[in-house]
Amino acid sequence: MIELLAYTTEDGWAYVRTDRGIFLVRPPYARSAMTQGNEYAVEKAITMHGFIGSKEEFDDWRAVTAFLNDQVVAYRNAQAQIIPQPGDAGKELLEFAPPEVLQRFLERLRDEWLSVGRWQEAQDLLLPILGLPTVTHDEALTRVSRDLLEQSMRLQRQSDKRHQELASLDIPDDRFSLVNNRYNRVELNKYKEITEQHRPLMVAV
Image 1: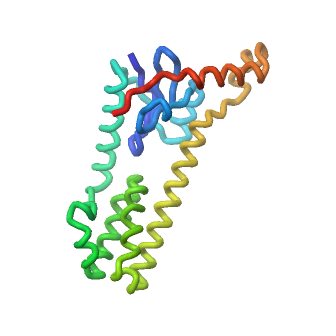
Image 2: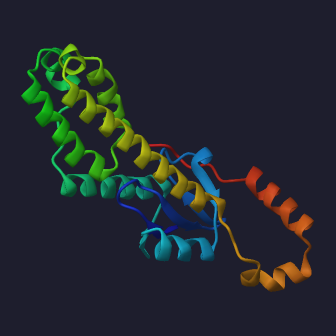
Image 3: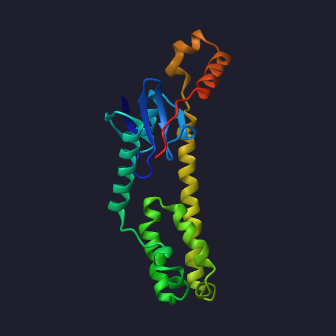
């Protein structure tokens, strides 16, 4: 049995409890994407990082990841309609689109993708758009495209920093004063190294 303790709907990060302890998991939900956690980290994630508290229980990892994936899809669908990828309609449509069409396309990308955390996808679109002749010959379109690219990269860096803070599991000493009194810091670090090497394997979906 796996207990879901906290999760985010925008990117699918979550804290879970198994018979081996508490873990922070994130896409693609493999062993390399897991970090050992604790009750303090879960509390911090909920109170400071916008995680949603949960007491849901699941029979296996596949059920957990399916739930998290469904939450992400539901969140993005609720925030905005999905705008078409250039490949869906053919890159030729963008290459030959007039300035006013490209302007509307960029506005939708800003409103419907950046607002729901689809930063990498936005960057994958904006880079080729910046190379289109229609854009390179239009100062306004060039400026908007560059601004959106910079905004998506900034938001992604902020998100990565937030996730790194969560993964660092900065635990104050006073929370574990009894442990620290009994074991010195060298012993605790050795224990951490051992547990890092024996993380459970999580199925990828």
